[in-house]
Length: 60
Image (cartoon, rainbow, N blue to C red; front, top):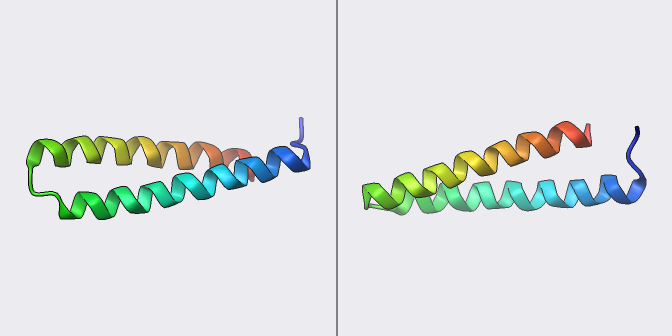
């Protein structure tokens, strides 16, 4: 079933937010010295990237 205009807009906004979050997490990860904390942020980044992929698959 095709998305309504509002649904497509909302998914697009979510995609923008998740993309920005991925960029921020990648930037934070590059600045972290502690290996444990770095791994946590890396895990969050992986989850964020999966969200982006999922949202992008619905917007197309």
